[in-house]
Amino acid sequence: MLKNLLFLLGLICVEAKIYAQTSYDWHEARWTIGVCEQDTGHIFYRLPARLEGKVTAGVWKQSISSAGEYLHFKTTARTFIVKYIVAGKNYALPHMPATGVSGVDLYGKDMHGGWNWSPPAKYSFGDTCVYEYRNLNIAASAPADFYLYLPLYASLQWISVGVPGGQSFEYTHAHKDKPIVAYGTSIMQGAVASRAGMAWTNILERKLSRKVINLGFSGNGRFDAPIFDLIAGVDAKLYILDCMPNLVSKKSYPADTIRQRLIYGINKLREQHPGVPILLAEHAAGNMPLGMDTAVVNAYHEASRTITEIFNELKKNGVKELYMLTEKEINFDINSTTDGTHPNDYGMMQYATAYEKKIREILHEPTGDLTTQYPVEQYRDGYDWRKRHEEVIANIEMNNPQAIIFGNSIINYWGGLPKGEKVADRGESAWQQYMTPLRVQNAGFGWDRVENVLWRVYHGELDHFKGNKIVLMIGTNNLGLNSDEDIVKGLTFLLQQIRYRKPQATIFVGGILPRRDMLQRVLTINPKIKAMAMANGYKFFDLSKNFMNGNALNDALFTGDGLHPNEKGYEVLGEQLSGILKR
Image 1 (cartoon, rainbow, N blue to C red):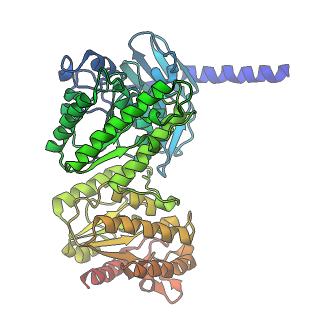
Image 2 (image 1 turned 180 degrees about the vertical axis):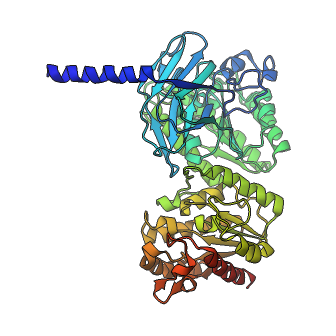
Image 3 (image 1 turned 90 degrees about the vertical axis):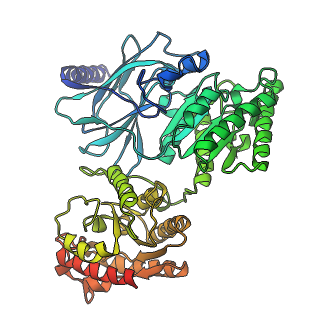
């Protein structure tokens, strides 16, 4: 046993020596993601400098924390060190650990868009706080996406990420998707999560793949006019107003005062954003079992009744796109909080799950039980999937195409704009001849599966599309992962979401093109796709015979991988598809 202990101590000493000798390149953060404005008086403050003195002292004091903010970076490094400085020495609170109050929290995305939490190998709090991450197993050696959530209650002064010399590193700006803006209390700010990433707004952000701007002010979220004025300037996807936990006292905040403040805020939002949904919330703890302190729980429940009465009044008066998340939907129980009010990690997950369900209903972005029915991003080496997504949207807005093709690398490599990945110009002439005259938008993405197209549909690739023809050619990349039944159910689900968004468009569904390694599988699943398409009123086409010689793949139409068409193959694809679209 002594020998084993000495051996382990020796390994630890060797490892420590290796890390101590590593030379690091340091990258200081110059911006964060997750704020309304960066004017910037201070890049880690959640409110712009112009509001100092215009909001209450309590709001400003809480706004200098970095709750909900994060750094997004891409790096080939899998070992790195984070160093930062926070103001003051109170790294923890009586009911909240230092890892939540003052700690950072790292998440990474794998190439399939899956979230991975990265536990630190070592961390410490002091004049300089340090988090070390070692040998993270994600996305092989390719540059990977990392999201570093910042402290929930501490005031961050400076932060830098160090990676071993020779490794690539770059900070990424916020994506162009419209954010969700959330205004609320300490529960929203993050009390009392064990880690920064466990604040419910950060969980929700990961669930929805949408930036959530956290304007939760501990003890000070009270429907104040200056905050409404601020958020009215944000072009948001949805607004969350969740302030009732700070408006429980009927003596300090009678119902008429709450009504006046809330009506001001809703009118302000409606003036500038008439069609954007507004989601109100009851007091989550109002659903708690009465336990021993019935007076407190009854006060929470009374706060819920107050906001619901105002909500019903506004709906009766014709306010549109106004919604309510109830205390029963949040569903707190005896295990949900640390102190009867503030959610622990379990309660944070309940909160985020309830919000996700409600927001998906409002935005009509449902999910199913299968992986093919749950929207996800993806990431590959040398291929910025999110950038292409934004370029497709920009191209649609600028060029007003009359048709759009959703697909994978087979379409991506073909031609048109934005230029595809790894294109060898083998299909460009066919695209120019057959697709350009029909004003077709290429929305093919390399390695895409059914669930990736679902994500892209939910995130705006049809929002500005005014054409009348939509083509779906997707599924070949699901063959190695999913059963025929799950693929067909995924396609059914995806097509329902497309039809909901563009009910007047003609929707064409293509069978999966034949491929050498799964030829029989393709020939088996295509009749199932056809039956589904015909039963739901879509136009089905199957080009398998055009790419085969009898019962075998026509190798003359494919590159060496037996999957992607060569120049002759794209000529066949273009001729056949143009005929289908013209008919």
